[in-house]
Image 1 (cartoon, one colour):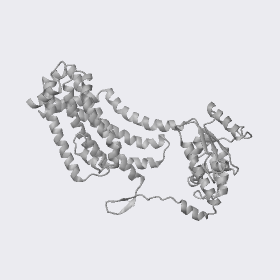
Image 2 (image 1 turned 180 degrees about the horizontal axis):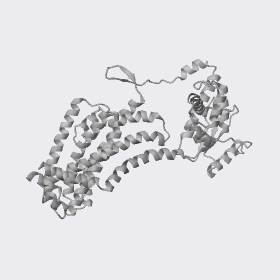
Image 3 (image 1 turned 60 degrees about the vertical axis):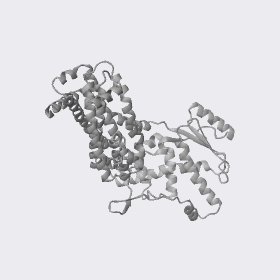
Length: 495
């Protein structure tokens, strides 16, 4: 009996892996994921530079100071680039940047002087955003281009006329936005405006707000004659150092890799869902097609219905393992190639590789894939056996799809509370056990929870195979309209 089941499984496996569509299906999933991640990052690089200007209704040159403050982060990044050029002789940087580095010989990149900041600001103002983008991924210089009122030829106009002219430029697409600074920010921030037709991209406004807030706060502190040291102490933010308790019971710093590992299960769960659904669906499709083509009748002349059903499930399971193994290989390959293709840093690699090569996660993924697949495969092979067309099968698949939606809806919540009540309850429902326990892997659950949920899952798979075998034995040879639910339940009780 076992040998015939093995032969059916072997036939199912070879029949799938020999086809070009199978390998195309394997490739298409990582390609789609890469497209979702990579194309978004790539498209962002082609984002048009946003041109803006500032109308200052006051008389303290706040606009000029605000622009310098706005570019401070860029200046600090440029200083770090210069320091990197000095440290790395092989650094292939533009000649203009190397020349700039020679101008700032002996500079402390962490604490540049006011004169050095001014010199850098003046140099950056002379460069186009396009040129700045070739030096580094510098946010403000790369995305935003300040245009003075003189360049726009509206500097001599009255404020009201200026704004009317700028409004027309925004309407005509010549300008992205403009800021209006109030007359006396030391007393009130009323009259501050951000004018733009784009209402979905607030980054320019938010970045400028942060820069201006810092300036106005400092101006008010000076106007109130508050000592700068006292003011700095008052404005000091409360920041919690994130710590964790290790296996030895002692505190340690939380690193980025720790955070990624905590969230890594959510990626495995999504991956697990795709794998189980797509491969179990392959079994359903295969069963319906063979039944409609009368191939199953030929097979049943040599093997029993139980042998045929088990062989099909195990053969498709082996096909699924091949598919999953290929996907894991693609994921590891992507982790190595992404920093090069997307222009990232080694930090991406340092954080992602440990998550992907975490043996406990991979082992749990493999185990829960097999458990989840066998459970849902038993359900779907039973559905396929009573259907004559894929349309009929899709109608009967709706309850199963509703069940499969629960792990997707709850996976973020469970990742945040891996040992919460909801997570624990779903863990002991066998239909959700593979997804929920995989999602809780970073918790991690207690050992007894792994033991009990695994026993429940195995027992449920055994009962599912028994029930599916009864339905398969009767339904696979039926023709005409699919049976009603009441008839199927009758088969379970009578057999």
